[in-house]
Length: 131
Image 1 (cartoon, one colour):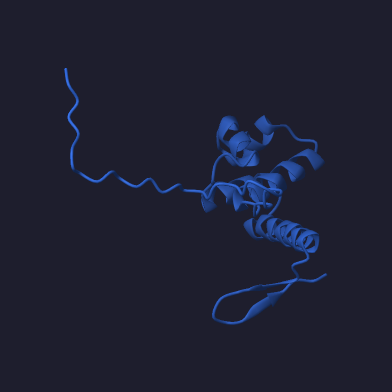
Image 2 (tube, rainbow, N blue to C red):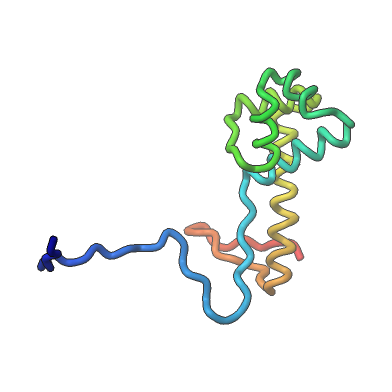
């Protein structure tokens, strides 16, 4: 069996994520929304001293799925999030507001660590983060 060389150009591979720079620390990654929402659900469940099974049964979702949502492994639909929130005695708006507060807190801490207190926000101007 012989391998023949072809004159076809080779396909260029484009990495989905840029390779990290050879020197210096890796940049901090933006927190993912699913991680923030999962943290809020887990924190609320634990503060109520409730089991994963109890909340999953009350929300009528599987315990395995709720666990994956809490760990940020699954991006839950708004219906699932609303059911989990209701099972915890919260509204969907409560869960989203708590996640937003955590995002703001983490973004502010990240910008303070990098010395960045202002960043472009697109065509409407810049966003000033509270120091």
